[in-house]
Image (cartoon, rainbow, N blue to C red; front, side, top):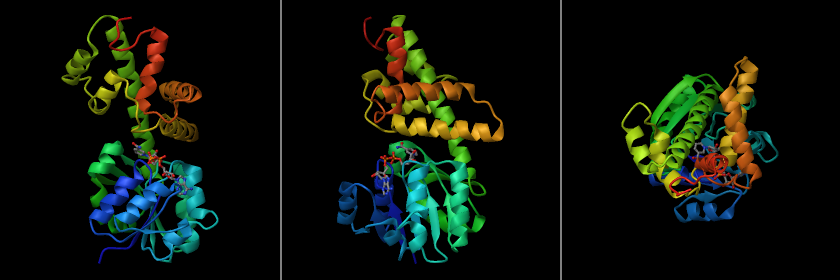
Length: 298
Ligand code: NAD
């Protein structure tokens, strides 16, 4: 029989992922800070709970999809948190992107209560969440991974057990470095090419046919060309993720010079009040410095 699932965090990612589990026939109890998405999910057949503790009580598998490390720590180990309600033998899966160190600490606290834990962050964005094509990278024991696999298969396409607790978050940090630096590189290329008088759409088309092709241009090409920065993935969250990568670099003695620069650029966007916009808005910084709008005449 399918396991009863508790879901905490119904944002851009969590809401469509939870909806996919409901459509697949799973029994779901949900909780989130904002009421709107909770109501949408209850209309689809989910049960609403008032706290993470209430979600955990009566669920066999509990999934969190929250913004940052403090949110997950609070929801899991805080007052009225998951660990106060989770029955022994249940499995906690954190699919948020958080610090690998915090992921390991929470897994240890869960183990102390007889609860298994996987860190299983995702890539593939809001589109992947809606279309159930996410890439899922999980850290934890082989037994817990095997138990979670049927659920992962409903949510994603590429599902990989990458190592012990925290390893999922390490791989996700690697992913976020590559995505951020690619957005920055594409932004520089488009501003240079456009200011030099070439149609930016042509630049994307030509680059997409050679070694410079990448998923950022494929998934965000239209955003760059139309200056549509509706999230997607928020600047605030990518800034948080590069902070995680830089902290991991500090811990393991790895210098990440360009990650640090792009982190500072995202910081500048937040200072401009653009933290809730899509990370492709990084383009606007390069445009400002060049005094040129991609696709414009100046
Ligand atoms: P979001 O801000 O859209 O959603 C977060 C949700 O959590 C919101 O609904 C908020 O109300 C809820 N929430 C926050 N704190 C809470 C708490 N203490 N208790 C209950 N609910 C709480 O963020 P998102 O884009 O859905 O991202 C979620 C996680 O997934 C982040 O860690 C992010 O880095 C990661 N992620 C996002 C994307 C993306 O493209 N958006 C892609 C991959 C990974």
